[in-house]
Length: 50
Image 1: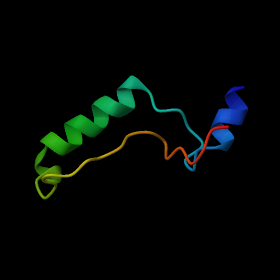
Image 2: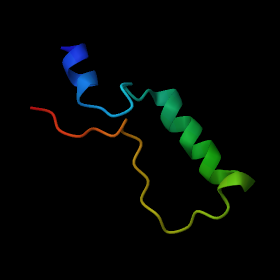
Image 3: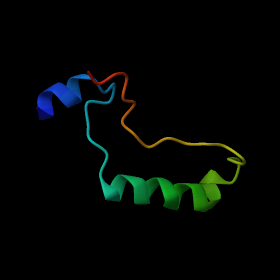
Image 4: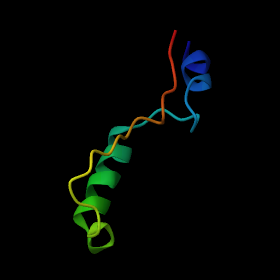
């Protein structure tokens, strides 16, 4: 089942809580200062599950 799910994700990785936390830290850091009013998805780029 895991391999089937991974095969539907462009990044071939399941996002972890740490991965989400890393994105939040980046957005709140000076490096993320140019990001405003955006909707950012942290999903591994799921294309289609079915």
